[in-house]
Image 1 (tube, rainbow, N blue to C red):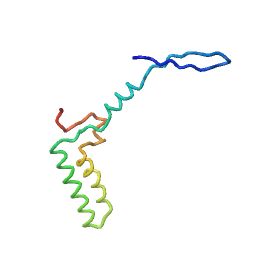
Image 2: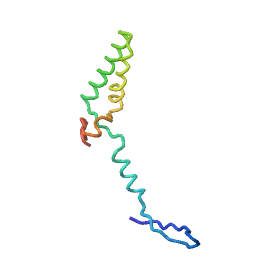
Image 3: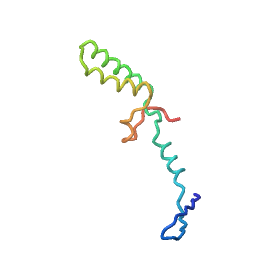
Image 4: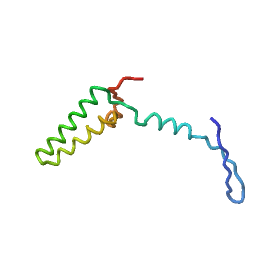
Length: 95
């Protein structure tokens, strides 16, 4: 990995310092943790159905607790669940 050379002055002396180029490592790390599909077919369908049912119940009962149905509806719609990340779970098929 190529290193960059930075120069700066301290006490009227110029110093050269080698700084490792960490951008490729940071970019790779971001790609690893980015939103990849981790919710598969049946799981997605169940999340959408449960989300819609909770929202429908909340509207019927005139209760704000039905708004919690937005979470499974949203995760089912986009196919990604943040709760799966710490455990390394995935119900989607590997490509």
